Image 1: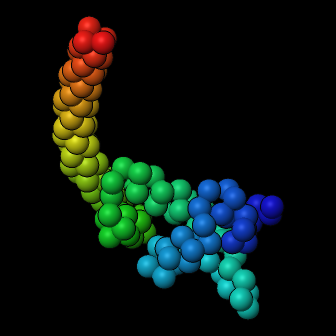
Image 2 (image 1 turned 180 degrees about the vertical axis):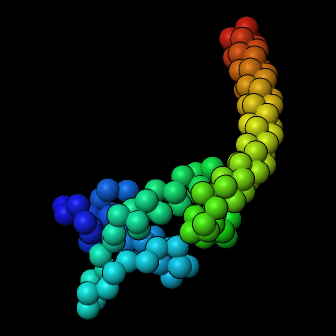
Length: 133
């Protein structure tokens, strides 16, 4: 693996993504690999961008939000605009994730209650069959 550029297979192996994923991000103009004939060579910049894309997706950011954040990197403001927008989006997504977590915890609790109820009913039925026999 070279340090300057990576081919598509090396990128896939390094980031645990498929070639289709890389081509998709390229088609959405999130990655800009260098073309040598049919080969795609990914630069250090592409690797940094892919790392941010994957992190953003993990946090629930849309591809459009990720694109906007990546585009803000090139403004000449010391990344203030990018950091400010990232902060606002992150706060919103964290709030959404915490609400989803609360809903999931409630659903888990209800499901556990239902499982316990079913177990008790099955136990009662089994005892009734034993007594009847």
